[in-house]
Amino acid sequence: MSHFAKVLNGTVVQVIVAEQDFFDNFIDTSPGQWIKTSYNTHGNIHRGQDGNPDGGIALRGNFAGIGYLYDFVNDVFIPPKPFASWTLSSNTWLWEPPVLMPQDGNEYRWNESNLTWDQIY
Image 1 (cartoon, rainbow, N blue to C red):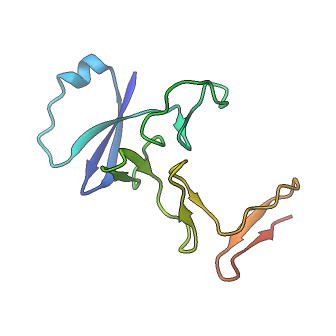
Image 2 (tube, rainbow, N blue to C red):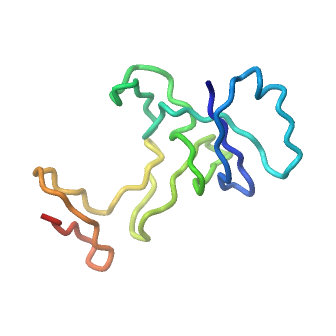
Protein backbone atom coordinates (compact mmCIF):
# COMPACT_ATOMS: atom_id res chain seq x y z
CA MET A 1 0.00 0.00 0.00
CA SER A 2 1.11 3.54 -0.71
CA HIS A 3 0.17 6.85 0.87
CA PHE A 4 -0.75 9.94 -1.09
CA ALA A 5 -1.27 13.49 0.13
CA LYS A 6 -3.57 15.95 -1.59
CA VAL A 7 -1.97 19.39 -1.66
CA LEU A 8 -4.00 22.52 -2.26
CA ASN A 9 -2.27 25.92 -2.26
CA GLY A 10 0.80 24.36 -0.63
CA THR A 11 -1.13 22.76 2.25
CA VAL A 12 -1.99 19.08 2.75
CA VAL A 13 -5.78 18.75 2.90
CA GLN A 14 -6.15 14.97 2.69
CA VAL A 15 -4.05 11.80 3.00
CA ILE A 16 -5.17 8.45 1.59
CA VAL A 17 -3.85 4.89 1.44
CA ALA A 18 -4.17 3.12 -1.91
CA GLU A 19 -2.58 0.44 -4.02
CA GLN A 20 -0.33 2.02 -6.64
CA ASP A 21 -2.30 0.35 -9.45
CA PHE A 22 -5.56 1.80 -8.13
CA PHE A 23 -4.03 5.23 -7.68
CA ASP A 24 -2.63 5.24 -11.23
CA ASN A 25 -6.24 4.98 -12.48
CA PHE A 26 -7.73 7.20 -9.76
CA ILE A 27 -9.55 10.22 -11.16
CA ASP A 28 -10.06 13.24 -8.94
CA THR A 29 -11.36 16.38 -10.60
CA SER A 30 -11.32 18.53 -7.45
CA PRO A 31 -8.59 21.19 -7.13
CA GLY A 32 -5.22 20.15 -5.79
CA GLN A 33 -2.36 17.81 -6.58
CA TRP A 34 -1.75 14.29 -5.25
CA ILE A 35 1.81 13.66 -4.05
CA LYS A 36 3.20 10.36 -2.76
CA THR A 37 4.34 10.32 0.87
CA SER A 38 6.01 7.64 2.98
CA TYR A 39 4.71 6.48 6.34
CA ASN A 40 8.26 5.36 7.15
CA THR A 41 9.87 8.79 6.70
CA HIS A 42 10.34 11.17 9.63
CA GLY A 43 13.01 13.80 10.09
CA ASN A 44 14.30 13.02 6.60
CA ILE A 45 15.23 9.49 7.71
CA HIS A 46 13.61 6.25 6.55
CA ARG A 47 12.65 4.08 9.51
CA GLY A 48 11.70 0.44 9.80
CA GLN A 49 8.70 -1.05 11.59
CA ASP A 50 10.58 -0.77 14.89
CA GLY A 51 10.96 3.00 14.42
CA ASN A 52 14.74 2.84 14.03
CA PRO A 53 16.63 4.02 10.93
CA ASP A 54 16.90 1.14 8.48
CA GLY A 55 18.99 2.60 5.67
CA GLY A 56 16.02 2.94 3.33
CA ILE A 57 15.51 5.98 1.14
CA ALA A 58 13.63 8.81 2.86
CA LEU A 59 10.77 10.25 0.81
CA ARG A 60 9.95 13.96 0.99
CA GLY A 61 11.33 14.70 4.45
CA ASN A 62 8.34 13.64 6.54
CA PHE A 63 5.15 11.63 6.27
CA ALA A 64 2.47 14.12 5.28
CA GLY A 65 -0.37 15.02 7.61
CA ILE A 66 -3.37 17.26 7.23
CA GLY A 67 -2.23 20.85 7.76
CA TYR A 68 1.36 20.12 6.76
CA LEU A 69 2.97 22.38 4.19
CA TYR A 70 4.41 21.04 0.97
CA ASP A 71 7.55 22.81 -0.20
CA PHE A 72 7.53 22.39 -3.99
CA VAL A 73 11.08 23.71 -4.36
CA ASN A 74 12.64 21.22 -1.92
CA ASP A 75 10.02 18.48 -2.52
CA VAL A 76 9.37 17.96 1.20
CA PHE A 77 6.45 17.90 3.64
CA ILE A 78 6.83 20.22 6.64
CA PRO A 79 4.73 19.92 9.82
CA PRO A 80 2.92 23.00 11.16
CA LYS A 81 5.17 25.38 13.09
CA PRO A 82 4.55 24.71 16.80
CA PHE A 83 5.88 28.01 18.19
CA ALA A 84 6.92 31.37 16.71
CA SER A 85 10.47 31.08 18.09
CA TRP A 86 11.22 27.70 16.49
CA THR A 87 13.21 27.46 13.25
CA LEU A 88 13.05 24.96 10.43
CA SER A 89 15.97 22.57 9.95
CA SER A 90 16.85 22.10 6.30
CA ASN A 91 18.38 18.72 7.23
CA THR A 92 15.39 17.12 8.95
CA TRP A 93 12.58 19.41 7.73
CA LEU A 94 11.37 19.57 11.33
CA TRP A 95 10.99 22.60 13.60
CA GLU A 96 13.66 23.06 16.26
CA PRO A 97 13.48 25.08 19.47
CA PRO A 98 16.00 27.86 20.13
CA VAL A 99 17.12 25.93 23.24
CA LEU A 100 17.54 22.16 23.24
CA MET A 101 15.32 20.21 25.61
CA PRO A 102 17.23 18.75 28.59
CA GLN A 103 17.95 15.03 28.21
CA ASP A 104 17.84 14.07 31.88
CA GLY A 105 14.92 11.65 31.90
CA ASN A 106 12.36 14.22 33.06
CA GLU A 107 9.42 15.47 31.00
CA TYR A 108 9.32 19.05 29.78
CA ARG A 109 6.93 21.46 28.09
CA TRP A 110 8.10 24.36 25.93
CA ASN A 111 7.42 27.81 27.45
CA GLU A 112 7.21 30.25 24.54
CA SER A 113 6.97 33.32 26.82
CA ASN A 114 10.31 32.59 28.49
CA LEU A 115 11.88 30.58 25.65
CA THR A 116 12.67 27.79 28.11
CA TRP A 117 11.75 24.21 28.82
CA ASP A 118 9.59 23.90 31.95
CA GLN A 119 9.83 20.59 33.77
CA ILE A 120 6.42 18.95 34.04
CA TYR A 121 7.44 16.47 36.76
